[in-house]
Length: 104
Image (cartoon, rainbow, N blue to C red; front, side, top):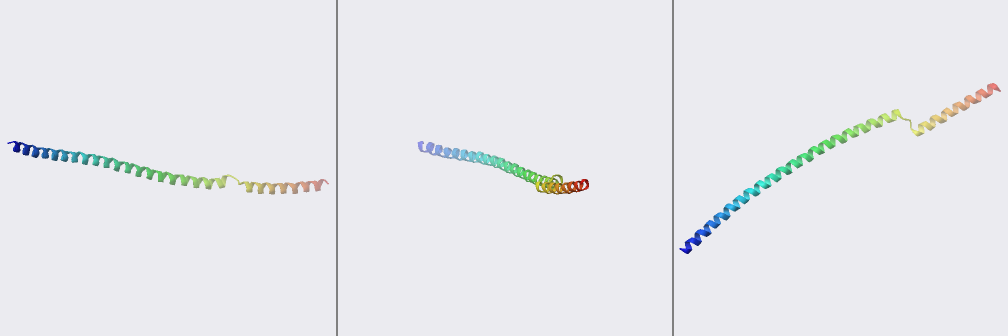
């Protein structure tokens, strides 16, 4: 009789362990699927941010090139200003010489 009780206890114990292992596997599977879902969403968010970043870089580059084109039309370079000043000074000197020649 004791042998039957021990055998029955062992069988029930193994069934219990099997049920616990199956339940643990299900919980573990759900946990992994949940984490993978979060991981996929994180990857998608990063990809969206990268796409927006690329668009912003292209927009910034376009604005910079437009600014570069406008600057060359709006502002005078240092060398150009020096050359303009030298030509203007030479013309004023010749005009001054002509006026002195007429007075003279």
